[in-house]
Image (cartoon, rainbow, N blue to C red; front, side, top):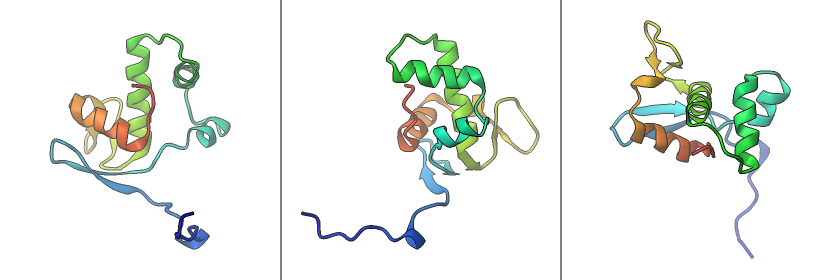
Length: 113
C-alpha cells in the first residue's frame, strides 16, 4: 500500500504546466479537458467526431486527424498563443515542427496519434 497521502483540494494542480520541447522552445499548457469542452460547446463538431472515431478505433482520414490535433494544441497551449491561421504576435500551429507537435501530444495526453 502506498504511503503517499491523497492530494488536498487546495493543492490540486490547476494551472498550466511548463513543457520543454525537443527544439529547445518552451510552452505553458493545460491538459485537455475534452468532456467539459464538449458539454459547453467549445469543440467543433468535426474535431469531436475525430475524437469519438479515435476512441472507437475507427479509421480517420489523415487530414481530419491533423486538423483535430492542431485544434487541441491551440486550445491547450496558453503561452505562447498558438493559432490555426497566421496572426500577428502569435505562433501559427503550422510553424511548430512535427517532433515538437508529437511531443506536445504525448505530454498533454492527446490520444489521436
